[in-house]
Length: 203
Image (cartoon, rainbow, N blue to C red; front, side):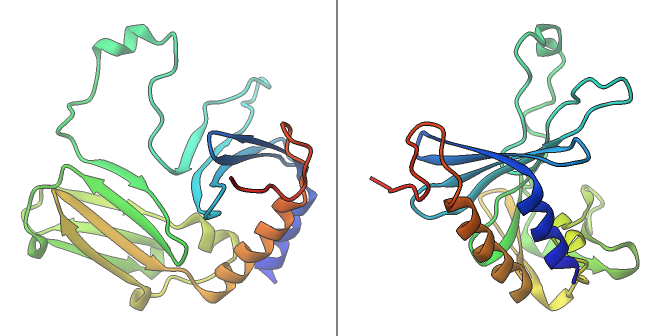
Protein backbone atom coordinates (compact mmCIF):
# COMPACT_ATOMS: atom_id res chain seq x y z
CA UNK A 1 0.00 0.00 0.00
CA UNK A 2 1.34 3.45 -0.93
CA UNK A 3 0.32 4.97 2.39
CA UNK A 4 2.19 2.29 4.27
CA UNK A 5 5.33 2.92 2.20
CA UNK A 6 5.20 6.65 3.06
CA UNK A 7 4.85 5.81 6.77
CA UNK A 8 7.75 3.38 6.44
CA UNK A 9 9.83 6.12 4.81
CA UNK A 10 9.09 8.41 7.75
CA UNK A 11 10.00 5.65 10.21
CA UNK A 12 13.28 4.96 8.36
CA UNK A 13 14.33 8.63 8.29
CA UNK A 14 16.81 9.96 10.86
CA UNK A 15 14.73 12.09 13.19
CA UNK A 16 15.58 14.67 15.82
CA UNK A 17 13.08 16.45 18.06
CA UNK A 18 13.15 19.72 19.95
CA UNK A 19 10.59 21.29 22.28
CA UNK A 20 10.42 25.08 22.10
CA UNK A 21 7.80 27.85 22.28
CA UNK A 22 4.98 25.38 22.96
CA UNK A 23 5.86 23.43 19.82
CA UNK A 24 7.34 20.03 19.06
CA UNK A 25 9.80 20.51 16.20
CA UNK A 26 10.80 17.42 14.21
CA UNK A 27 13.60 17.26 11.65
CA UNK A 28 13.70 14.32 9.21
CA UNK A 29 16.72 13.34 7.12
CA UNK A 30 15.82 10.82 4.41
CA UNK A 31 18.15 8.31 2.75
CA UNK A 32 18.09 10.30 -0.51
CA UNK A 33 19.41 13.38 1.32
CA UNK A 34 16.10 15.26 1.35
CA UNK A 35 15.18 17.01 4.59
CA UNK A 36 11.75 17.73 6.05
CA UNK A 37 11.03 19.89 9.08
CA UNK A 38 7.68 19.91 10.87
CA UNK A 39 6.28 21.83 13.82
CA UNK A 40 3.33 20.66 15.92
CA UNK A 41 1.39 22.43 18.63
CA UNK A 42 2.31 20.61 21.86
CA UNK A 43 -1.20 20.63 23.30
CA UNK A 44 -3.35 19.94 20.24
CA UNK A 45 -0.72 18.02 18.14
CA UNK A 46 -1.89 20.17 15.23
CA UNK A 47 0.58 20.50 12.34
CA UNK A 48 1.67 24.17 12.14
CA UNK A 49 4.52 23.99 9.63
CA UNK A 50 6.01 21.58 7.11
CA UNK A 51 8.91 22.51 4.88
CA UNK A 52 11.33 20.66 2.60
CA UNK A 53 14.79 21.16 1.19
CA UNK A 54 17.27 19.14 -0.83
CA UNK A 55 20.82 19.55 -2.01
CA UNK A 56 21.51 20.93 -5.45
CA UNK A 57 23.74 19.30 -8.09
CA UNK A 58 26.85 20.73 -6.39
CA UNK A 59 25.88 19.34 -2.98
CA UNK A 60 24.90 22.67 -1.41
CA UNK A 61 21.68 22.99 0.56
CA UNK A 62 18.83 24.56 -1.36
CA UNK A 63 16.27 26.93 0.15
CA UNK A 64 13.47 25.61 2.34
CA UNK A 65 10.17 25.22 0.47
CA UNK A 66 7.13 25.66 2.71
CA UNK A 67 4.33 23.10 2.15
CA UNK A 68 2.20 23.94 5.20
CA UNK A 69 2.30 27.19 7.18
CA UNK A 70 3.10 30.85 6.57
CA UNK A 71 5.19 31.60 3.47
CA UNK A 72 8.84 32.17 4.40
CA UNK A 73 10.08 35.67 5.03
CA UNK A 74 13.18 37.05 3.34
CA UNK A 75 16.34 35.37 4.52
CA UNK A 76 18.59 37.38 6.78
CA UNK A 77 21.24 39.14 4.78
CA UNK A 78 19.12 39.47 1.65
CA UNK A 79 18.91 43.21 2.20
CA UNK A 80 19.18 43.96 -1.49
CA UNK A 81 15.85 42.18 -1.97
CA UNK A 82 14.22 44.39 0.67
CA UNK A 83 13.82 47.06 -1.98
CA UNK A 84 12.01 44.79 -4.42
CA UNK A 85 9.01 43.72 -2.37
CA UNK A 86 5.75 42.38 -3.70
CA UNK A 87 2.85 44.73 -3.13
CA UNK A 88 1.10 43.93 0.14
CA UNK A 89 -2.20 43.98 -1.75
CA UNK A 90 -1.21 41.01 -3.93
CA UNK A 91 -3.02 37.73 -3.13
CA UNK A 92 -1.13 35.58 -0.61
CA UNK A 93 -1.62 31.80 -0.92
CA UNK A 94 -0.86 29.60 2.08
CA UNK A 95 -1.88 26.26 3.54
CA UNK A 96 -3.05 25.95 7.13
CA UNK A 97 -4.55 22.55 7.99
CA UNK A 98 -7.04 21.55 10.64
CA UNK A 99 -7.32 18.15 12.35
CA UNK A 100 -9.90 16.89 9.86
CA UNK A 101 -9.09 18.80 6.69
CA UNK A 102 -6.44 20.31 4.45
CA UNK A 103 -7.07 24.02 4.27
CA UNK A 104 -5.77 26.86 2.09
CA UNK A 105 -6.22 30.58 2.60
CA UNK A 106 -5.81 33.13 -0.15
CA UNK A 107 -5.64 36.60 1.36
CA UNK A 108 -6.28 39.91 -0.44
CA UNK A 109 -9.12 38.62 -2.62
CA UNK A 110 -11.81 41.29 -2.21
CA UNK A 111 -14.40 39.99 -4.69
CA UNK A 112 -17.76 38.54 -3.53
CA UNK A 113 -18.07 34.77 -3.05
CA UNK A 114 -20.10 34.19 -6.24
CA UNK A 115 -17.13 35.34 -8.36
CA UNK A 116 -15.05 32.27 -7.35
CA UNK A 117 -15.12 28.66 -8.43
CA UNK A 118 -12.92 25.93 -6.99
CA UNK A 119 -12.77 22.63 -8.84
CA UNK A 120 -10.89 19.34 -9.02
CA UNK A 121 -9.03 18.65 -12.27
CA UNK A 122 -8.59 14.87 -12.04
CA UNK A 123 -6.63 14.56 -15.30
CA UNK A 124 -4.04 17.04 -13.99
CA UNK A 125 -4.25 15.78 -10.37
CA UNK A 126 -4.78 19.29 -9.03
CA UNK A 127 -7.33 21.78 -7.77
CA UNK A 128 -8.03 25.04 -9.60
CA UNK A 129 -9.33 28.39 -8.34
CA UNK A 130 -10.90 30.64 -10.95
CA UNK A 131 -12.75 33.94 -10.89
CA UNK A 132 -15.45 34.94 -13.36
CA UNK A 133 -13.89 38.43 -13.59
CA UNK A 134 -10.57 36.85 -14.72
CA UNK A 135 -8.70 38.59 -11.88
CA UNK A 136 -7.29 35.47 -10.22
CA UNK A 137 -6.31 31.93 -11.29
CA UNK A 138 -4.42 29.37 -9.22
CA UNK A 139 -3.59 25.69 -9.64
CA UNK A 140 -2.43 23.70 -6.63
CA UNK A 141 -1.81 20.08 -5.71
CA UNK A 142 -2.28 18.19 -2.45
CA UNK A 143 1.11 16.51 -1.88
CA UNK A 144 -0.30 14.37 0.95
CA UNK A 145 -2.70 12.64 -1.46
CA UNK A 146 0.15 12.13 -3.96
CA UNK A 147 2.35 10.51 -1.29
CA UNK A 148 -0.47 8.11 -0.43
CA UNK A 149 -1.41 7.70 -4.11
CA UNK A 150 -5.01 8.66 -3.38
CA UNK A 151 -7.23 10.23 -6.05
CA UNK A 152 -8.77 13.67 -5.72
CA UNK A 153 -12.45 13.64 -4.72
CA UNK A 154 -14.52 16.65 -5.78
CA UNK A 155 -17.09 15.97 -3.03
CA UNK A 156 -14.39 16.56 -0.37
CA UNK A 157 -13.74 20.10 -1.64
CA UNK A 158 -15.58 23.26 -0.61
CA UNK A 159 -14.84 26.93 -0.02
CA UNK A 160 -16.05 30.06 1.69
CA UNK A 161 -15.11 33.72 1.59
CA UNK A 162 -14.77 36.21 4.46
CA UNK A 163 -12.67 39.31 5.28
CA UNK A 164 -11.11 39.44 1.78
CA UNK A 165 -9.88 35.84 2.26
CA UNK A 166 -10.90 32.79 0.24
CA UNK A 167 -10.83 29.70 2.48
CA UNK A 168 -10.66 26.35 0.66
CA UNK A 169 -11.23 23.13 2.60
CA UNK A 170 -10.61 19.52 1.54
CA UNK A 171 -11.77 16.81 3.94
CA UNK A 172 -8.93 14.42 4.76
CA UNK A 173 -9.57 10.82 3.62
CA UNK A 174 -9.78 8.17 6.37
CA UNK A 175 -6.44 6.69 5.19
CA UNK A 176 -4.67 9.97 5.92
CA UNK A 177 -6.40 10.49 9.28
CA UNK A 178 -5.32 6.98 10.34
CA UNK A 179 -1.74 7.56 9.13
CA UNK A 180 -1.50 10.88 10.97
CA UNK A 181 -2.67 9.22 14.18
CA UNK A 182 -0.05 6.50 13.71
CA UNK A 183 2.65 9.09 13.07
CA UNK A 184 1.81 11.00 16.26
CA UNK A 185 2.44 7.79 18.25
CA UNK A 186 5.83 7.45 16.54
CA UNK A 187 6.80 11.07 17.17
CA UNK A 188 6.03 10.79 20.87
CA UNK A 189 8.68 8.06 21.13
CA UNK A 190 11.45 10.38 19.93
CA UNK A 191 13.48 11.84 22.78
CA UNK A 192 13.26 15.60 22.60
CA UNK A 193 16.56 17.48 22.74
CA UNK A 194 15.72 19.64 25.71
CA UNK A 195 13.99 17.38 28.18
CA UNK A 196 15.00 13.77 27.52
CA UNK A 197 11.39 12.59 27.83
CA UNK A 198 10.03 10.45 25.03
CA UNK A 199 6.41 11.40 25.66
CA UNK A 200 6.41 15.15 26.15
CA UNK A 201 4.14 16.43 28.85
CA UNK A 202 2.27 19.64 28.16
CA UNK A 203 2.15 22.38 30.78
